[in-house]
Amino acid sequence: MKTFKIENLEMPIRLDKWLKSNCNLNSALIQKLIRKSDIKVNGKKNSRDQKLINGDIITIYAKFVEQVPPTTGKIDKKECSKLLEQIKKSIIFKDDNIIAINKPYGIASQSGTGIKISIDDILDGLMFDCKIRPRLVHRLDRYTTGLLLLARNQRAAGTLTQYFKDGLIEKKYLAVLAGNLKNKTGIIKSEIAKFGSKDLKEAVTKYKVLISNPELQISFVEFTPITGRTHQIRIHAAQELGCSIVSDIKYGDTTSLVPELERKIHLHSSEIKIKNFFEKDYSLKVDPPSHIEMAIKKIT
Image (cartoon, rainbow, N blue to C red):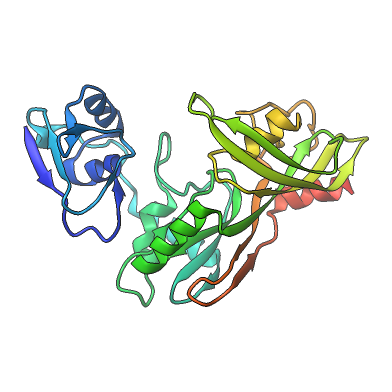
């Protein structure tokens, strides 16, 4: 048995992330130990996404924790350097509180299954004139492009996290769908669960068709998520509108429907508006990437 007391955290951190960094445990073993109640926080069983705060006591009921095989996927320094330079070039806005990135296609926000390197791994290189590393306050799917916000200090991180939770940040997404929608505008309300999960949560999304091509059966649509559920837009497009996002094979394979379009998920975080954030309003906007621009040209 081994016991740890959480100290010197600047903000809450997920249990599994802390264990990976501090106990040399890999993801599979962490899940196994938690499932068997061999890892407890403050004497209670917790899930891997349990948030730790200063003062928490972690107890691991396993022998020789320090000898558990480390995570196999070591981060390559050259890859880190390459990604860091790519992300630096993608910064569209920076002030004392936030950094806004136009995230490129195929780059993960955080680590996960099958991901060797993510933006979260290179945040130390984005400190610039600040003394602490910036923090992710929301995420984009690996194959979703566009606006991603980083908080540059603890106060900004806490405020933005709460703003996202309370729905005080307006986000707009652009997507290319396979098919034509009957209604050109609408509000989708449903209970959804992300792929492979049974945990249903209410999700609300506004949508507006910007361009459609009945002959090609392709639509260019603007989405405004009111709630922030995982894969919300992707699920609502496929299950409620009946028109999956192009190349989103997880929620509907559209390859045969639109063979003329590039085989990339056509979803882009285009706009973020924040009001009264430390007495300042923000309106950030980025153009869609080339594969979506090419699709728009074909539609028109």
